[in-house]
Image (tube, rainbow, N blue to C red; front, side, top):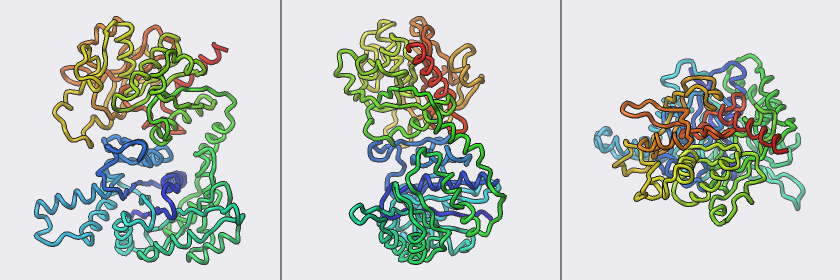
Amino acid sequence: MTKYVFTTGGVVSSVGKGILSASLGMLLESRGLKIAMMKLDPYINVDPGTMNPYEHGEVFVTDDGAETDLDLGHYERFTSAKLSQKSNATTGAVYNTVIQKERRGEFLGKTVQVIPHITDEIKSRIRQLTSEEEGVDVAIVEIGGTVGDIESLPFLEALRQFRLEIGPENCCFIHVTLVPYIEAAGELKTKPTQHSVRALRDIGLQPDVIVCRTGKKRLGPDQCAKIALFCNVTADAIINAEDISPLYAIPLNFKSQNLDTTVLRLLHMDAPEGDVTEWTAMVDRLKNANKEVRIAAVGKYVGHDDAYKSINEGFVHAGIANDCKVKLVWVDSEKLEQMDDVGAALAEFDGILVGPGFGSRGIEGKISAVRYARENRVPYFGICLGMQIAVIELARHVAGFTGATSTEFDPKTPHPVISLLSEQRGIKDMGGTMRLGQYRCDLAPGTKAHAAYGADTIHERHRHRYEFNNSYLDTMIDAGMVVSGRHPKGDHDLVEIMELADHPWFCASQFHPEFKSKPMYPQPLFRDFVTAALAFKEARA
């Protein structure tokens, strides 16, 4: 049967449960085990699709169109686990399902309560994670939030019940907790960890492994022994998790402390020793790159790194492939709108990116950035909205369509070169209703996109409501637009990738290529964009 690892967090939020879960998944896969991964989030939103990126970070999208927590991006980047609609569930989604069942009379008139109905639904979703996938050895389930918060209590109660149902020998509980360093005292303090574990015990759960986030410090043997004693775990189950850079070196830190071996012992499992040679070599390339390119990433959520998490990581992976470091500098598009000459802000960069986004705020600044990249032959990469902005800029300043824009920004525009997808018309609910998930894209031979992928057909993930308006297709092609990727769709193809014919490297996609990038398998468009940025830098020098 499938074994289960449950990851909880204590003392503070954002303590690193997602990275711990992803790292453990990578280490178990290196030992030949098949894993599945899941995130349970305690907030009442049905999914993060309608949440502000400043509050929640980016929305990660799976092949089957689930809008999920950004931690699922870490799972995919670190492992080969197949993520889907089953891989993320929120309190809102759980309650919504239970309420719908009650409305249909499925509870036969019984009073619907947190126990057993809500906890039963949570347990059902945990079981569904592996119900249709053969041969899963270990399922890793991360519980969002912080132990002690009222929001996570139903999930923790469900885990207590689940442990009894499958047997204690078939599950392992890992608690990730902050061990703060008090400067005045000159030492790491273990008391918050002790209190966090006590809160878990009050619920009926005993952690088997405690992972200690310690900032730049590291727990000594005496401190590890103290935590083990007071928290009732074995000494080898106290794991140091000091801050480590780069991110992809973290699994190697856990490997050196035998985290995977300890977990397998607790699960009563045997597996060959893992081979992390390729992963170690990848980390070494990342650390030792001696070249650097600077990319201007023009957006409006520039104050929050997690808003573009997968894009940030996609450039790390592209840097690995090019043996260089990519310095991504976020440029506020609203500030560009206030400048007479955007070259003053963009001239120092080797490439320009305009990424995804919604709403009209900062749009004119993005258009100015695209115009600068086109006219000055600076490598340009557009993602989702970044493709639409590139079309708008070309329509205005080359094709001569004054006032051209998207109907998202101006429903009465005289030239709607970007318009609402036909299937989006009449939709009022905002959550989960966009064009979501993986779609086919046919590539045109002889284009930058075809050269990057080395294939005629690809499949990439989408998250958008608006598309290129095919009424302007012929005119835009005459203006220099190359349609290098199309999605076949009955009466008309959707433009998926556009390029410029007379530009060294100008490529923009309607889809989100960042969602499929991995450190061992960099995304082709990211990789080639960084290659072009390197060439531009060398030519300019």
